[in-house]
Structures are given as C-alpha cells and as structure tokens.
Amino acid sequence: VVVACPCALGLATPTAVMVATGLEPIMRAQKIRYVIFDKTGTLTQSRAAVTTVKVFTEMDRGEFLTLVASAEANSEHPIAKAIVEYARHYHFFKDPNVINSPKNESNTNTEWLLDASDFCAIPGRGIEADINQKQILVGNRTMLVEKGISISAEVENFLTNLEENARTGILVAYDYELIGVVGVADPLKREAAIVVEGLFKMGVRSIMVTGDNWRTARAVAREAGIQDVRAEVMPAGKADVIRSFQKDGSIVAMVGDGINDSPALAAADVGMAIGAGTDIAIEAADYVLMKNSLEDVITAIDLSRKTFARIR
Ligand code: ADP
Ligand code: MG
Image 1: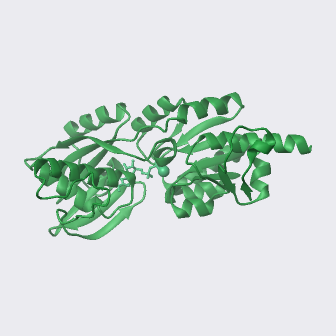
Image 2 (image 1 turned 90 degrees about the vertical axis):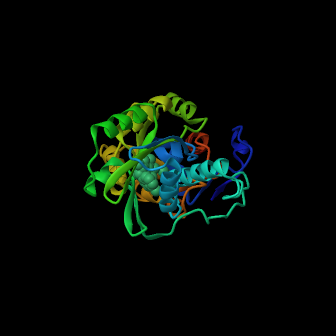
Image 3 (image 1 turned 30 degrees about the horizontal axis):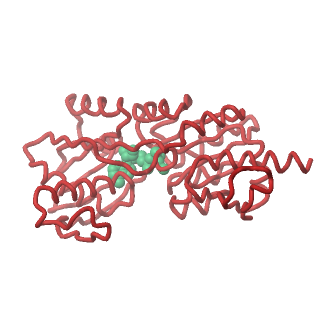
C-alpha cells in the first residue's frame, strides 16, 4: 500500500512520504503509545565525522590513521566511513601526490591503504583484522575488554571526556596494545528534537535505544529531548526492549535503519525503517520512511488517526 496522497485527507504533505506493506500496520499506527528510536542513523544523520585523533604511543599520526583506515575500509558502518574519509583528507593535505583529491566523489584510489586480511565485523562492537600479520581491533570498550586489551586510566579519562560531549570514542589496539582513540561526532537529524516534542504533544512517548555507550547515549538523548535511554544494547536486546514496552498491551513502534535493528523492527507492532537504511531493516519493517525524515513518523500516526476516525 503506497500512502501516496495524504492531501486528500487534509494533510499538508504533498508527496509519497512512506510506503506501508499492509493495511494492518496503517490501522495500528493510530494506537501507538511508544516510539522506540535507534540512535545511529535514525535519530542521527549517520554522517559521522572524526573530531579527534589521539595516539597513545610513539606511532606517527599518519601511520596510525592509515592503519585504522585500512582495517575500517572493509566495513559499511558510518563510523568506518568517517574514519576512512578522515584519513584520506589527512594524507591528501600532507602530500597531494600520494592520494587523489578527497573532494573527488568518484575517488576510488585505495593504493594508500594497507592490505588487511581475516576481516571480521562484530555487530554493536567493532571490527577485527590482521595487518602486517598483527591483529588490529577497532571498536568500543566492550569489544576491547572482551579481547583482553587493558585500558589505562589515561585512556579512560580521554574517553569519558569525549563521551560527555556526545562523541563516540573508538579504541584502536594493534598487536595487543592500545595505541589510540578516534573521537567521532554524529549530529542529530535537524528535525529530531521537534519530532520528539511533536510526539509528546500527541501523547506518544519517545525512547532511545542504542548499541553505543551510556555516556554518549545520554548526551545525544538530552539533545533530542528524550529522557528514557537504553544503551549498550545488543541487537537481540533491542527486541527485548520492544517487548518490555508491549507487556501492558501498549502498541509500540520501532524506528531503525540497521541490520542490528531488524529483530526489533519485526518485534514491534509497527516497524518503521529509514529509507536509506539497510535492506534487511527495510524488509523487517511495516513502513519505509522514503524521505529519511523522522517527521514521517508523525505523519504515519496522524494519517492513521485521521483515516480511521473518519471511518468510525
Ligand atoms: P546503534 O545501535 O546506535 O545504531 P551500532 O550498534 O551500529 O549503533 O554500533 C554500536 C557501537 O559499536 C558503536 O557506537 C561503536 O562503538 C561500535 N562499532 C560498531 N561498528 C563499528 C566499526 N565498524 N568501527 C568501530 N566501531 C564500531
Ligand atoms: Mg542504527
């Protein structure tokens, strides 16, 4: 079912804003009491940018960036893309002969990257690979601790500071030693706070759920005007969060974009995927927000309320 012409229902939105896969979710949307938002790529723009690079060893900054980018070049995660992009810019401005202009969108020069073997992505944690026969780990605290890397007080302080400023601190360990931290910012979508406020006025509560750490999650939620936060949640855990809100019979919507959101999108009464999200998320959802705008969460509820109020 394509909800193509909301103007017929007296709404201002003129174009196809969302695609729903059935009548049931459209009928259910009017009763939504809770909207659970994923953080990365849903509330945020998913246009992460590196803001800080801190090397904790003797290693040269450029060398460090090449190493991290070479490992992350195999990942689709927005954080990975940000790191590769940053390293590319860094090298370009140091020596334009080594690398094509990073401004060139069709830039496919990867010669500056090192060969990474045995690449492995661990959802909600980070990535692992081998470079020059040595193990490289790029990810969050949980992952590094699980892999037996110790985090010094100096590094911990550095991370805390980043996280309190709504940044995500990505740790890098090479050859079993923590060698640096990359600070990444992922700003809120422009409409995020407005939508949360709008939902509140409609009697709908917003909750944020994320695989990211607690401090960053709280800082981002505060910016969005969301009080209820669940952080350091693994993909299966996101579906559990949905079920916990459904316990009293409440109708719960999930809005997400990633592979890690698909169990929750399927568990929700109304699953809404960001149009630019991964195919797996889109398949698991009832609605696809074609413009990637969170405003269409309101539109979906509004449309359902107006439509079924008229029929009744
Ligand atoms: P969200 O639940 O907010 O969408 P994700 O589950 O995608 O977030 O990621 C959770 C955390 O896992 C990230 O904040 C980051 O610390 C870590 N992570 C995931 N993938 C990567 C990667 N490719 N490189 C570095 N860190 C990663
Ligand atoms: Mg996400």
